[in-house]
Image 1 (cartoon, rainbow, N blue to C red):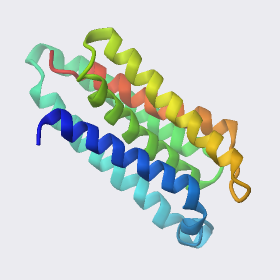
Image 2: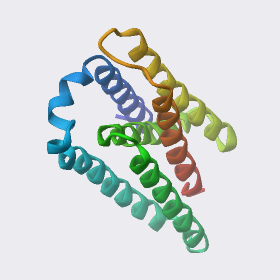
Image 3: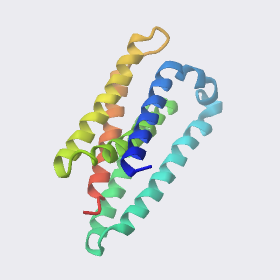
Length: 173
């Protein structure tokens, strides 16, 4: 399988996951919502954060020596921004949006790299990630058993944007 085919497949699977969460996300509620399940929901966020940290460390090691420090500080700032965004959510289950759309941002960055280079790649990834975040909430707004929320549109778009910017800052070229 080529890198392009792999990136297309990963993005398609993640988009399918987001749609499934929109349609049937309420089924996960009993396992993630409420004070008794707070640790489980935040554990998912922590595992995703550790995976992101591992990705960042590997990415930093591939950079030329002169760019590592600046990229490392940018990644630390981005991790802080994502952490604050997750912490600012009123309900701990809403912090999962940061993870889901952060991963989407990275996948959009990789996908856009097969079509554009430089700033057009960044803009394509940013726009696509934010549009998917808005479309997810719009779909939830249309479903009678779900609630679309403008705050989630903001969180989805910002999470995707932060990770796209981090990927752009840590790119090896």
